[in-house]
Image 1 (cartoon, one colour):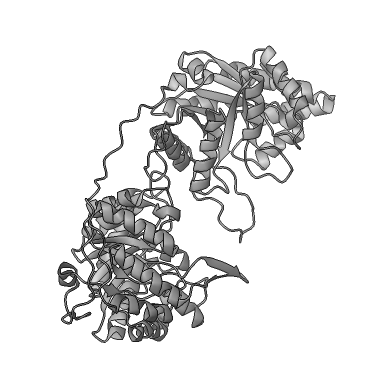
Image 2 (image 1 turned 60 degrees about the vertical axis):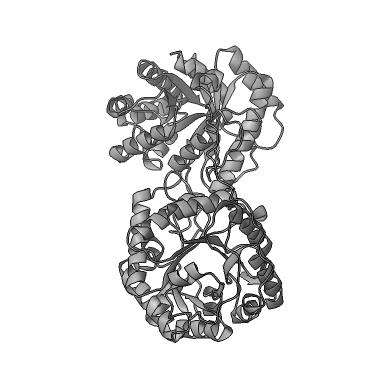
Length: 618
């Protein structure tokens, strides 16, 4: 449980007494408020790195610190929240990490006048770490260690890791800091309603994991005030470390493109008293808070001793019971067939326009009657009013005909939304997935990023769900039983990278692969011979409809090249007026050559032309 809260003792000397001694002695202290809010009001451009102002406009940064000192803040956070290598890189500042952090510490020290402690502020990397992103955990630790080392060189009194939504990243940050310094370390997560982290981790579990990684103080910031109280109550039952809390100034309201926080300073006074009762010893503000909020919050910290937090037995966080994943062969009939060594056949279908599915349903039944087993339903950016692949999958399941393989694109899906979409898909009976990164949604140079997690991270997410855990590692109940497929491109211009990414996907849990359209059988044969680990492979065949389409693949889709002899055959067929027949003949030849190499075939039905696909398979 948390220590009983008392007001600052008369002997407390913020900025002079070592912060570790202050923590050991007990008492409460007051952080400052938002830095970005204040710098913005001083003319800082939001598209620039605010941390660069430590070098270019140190006076503006010093003024903010001094305003908080005058308001009664006893701990000043340096203007270094995003001063790590990854977040400085887009601004061309990756090589100035040490300079920016050291100078940030110096400015805060100068502004404190010896009357406040200086906390070196560190935030998330701004990129996903494994298993949901491309940054290895050891690389993340190194980047955090680099920033912590620089802040320690600037003579900060403590370090604060804040606004972390992904708990594993925060754990690596703590480990990175601890690898270079033993300064007191405050670790804070951002939470949602009921005090759970933004990825659903219980606050008690989050506190225990932060403490286990090496934090000196654990707490919450950058969250709505009532959610912070909920989190404090959960944390106080799980750990005996001091607790900290820095809420936002209410819920943000968007006005003319700006986020405005409208909670009054008086509101934070009332909140602060409740936070102290909940066990917090360090209070302050986050987004939207100003010196006025801190001045008001000082009333809560400096008031008479509040009612002590009730004594609770520490609630240990126990590991969840072992979960037995669904056996691969039991995940779906398609999985069972492939694992039994059967050769499977299917079609790749475009999504129908509109909502009427009667014609499509009739066609699907006809395909099943001809022995076709599955249908791959595409996903991705849609410029037309097309049905979603999960909805079309329901048609397949309702008919009991073809087994659907639902393609799930990572584009325009944040990790949390992807998780929700996957859970919803499994709840409706969808088991076969094809996970793809997906093409960019817009070719515009200035388009906002539309990709948070790629196919490797998404496969890792499915692996978590298949083991009964969400992205935060929390139990979700019974595990899902997705049969997970990935894309394999034998004609990729960087074969080594394609093989490496394939291997990462298999290591993450991929159980089968579907190729890009194959026009060069030798390319696939060569790639399969180089794969270090093999899962069942389904090859894709595309029946060409014209010489112009062959040229399109070669010129516009260079990752799916059409060999020159095939282009020449289609050009000759064009002259003879038999392009369709020649396209089917070529596709049949490719399918026959592929059959000994793979575990199944799917034929693309261009523009929904199912008869063309059936003609190839027959």
